[in-house]
Length: 411
Ligand SMILES: Nc1ncnc2c1ncn2[C@@H]1O[C@H](COP(=O)(O)OP(=O)(O)OP(=O)(O)O)[C@@H](O)[C@H]1O
Image (cartoon, rainbow, N blue to C red; front, side, top):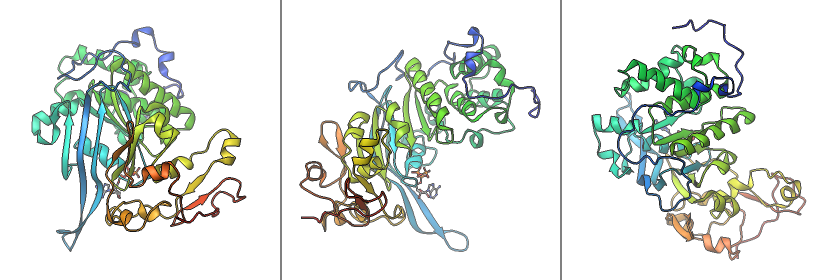
């Protein structure tokens, strides 16, 4: 094992090292055998509606108890981090989950993998209810579902070499007995993420941010999973490096038929990589559609607000488009608003119904699901926005972004 402080490494760059690696280090997939069915072979194109769901969440809830008392032995309430989410991800699909910080995205990803124990609901993975699995069965299932974390430096133990980081997972699943095979798997996995075999003897701090994330991806990949949950996989990276890592993820998906749940607060990150996008607000899914549909015509007021905050490269379009500026913070998930959770910030909220009745996620137009009582009326302009706590800036009203614009009273 090499000395972690040894400085005989070339200056890290984010250019994939595969470009300099020998051809022997590129190409083949890991040799760890797949267990169980469900892995599509060869390239897959998501958007293929005929494909069976690889994973389905049914009314998933993750509530964290709030403890009080001297010994923290009294439960005085709950943080409703995920509060009744149903979604399904087809094999080979990329599902992008977006929403403001604190809306429950990470908890959903961790709950799906049972890294936090759900309070209620079902997680059906390749036809099996994961919540019914125990011990060894759950361990076997977990090999098929891996996670990539946001900050590779904090998720990788700095005292472990890359080899040790990668072997760890294989050992945990009893797949590290055949030394020659392990060696080959590690080299192949590194090559797949664009790193040379020489990286095995190095330590995380010897790599740049993009390369560390490649190690994080290799760590997930070494077990030859079918589903990868990537929690903010590029948000710690420079913008120029983000595209490289996202392209790598896309290539790996095409080569291995991977299914992704990609969690991101940045809409631009999921726009090009996701087939389906789900928008979360305060523990619930408020909108879900194909990436194309949701970016072309967001229907839920919250999604409209999120989208309107993303700058458009064309200055003419940028100057003319409508901005919905959400005022106020996300309400506490320990004390969520009644009825529609967004009604306290919604410029289209209507008296009584929005405050009293929680809207279900329902199909409003083909494949486009929206949790809003008034989605149709908002879409066709029958309902106009008004000022509640949000401010609407209309084009041509001379108002600078951030200033209140012309307000249209509710009829
Ligand atoms: N272990 C925990 N115990 C108590 N509350 C928690 C725990 N984990 C998360 N929460 C709370 O659950 C809510 C949702 O958090 P979560 O991290 O899932 O949101 P997020 O959308 O992923 O945001 P971020 O991008 O900031 O992580 C937050 O209010 C958070 O404080």
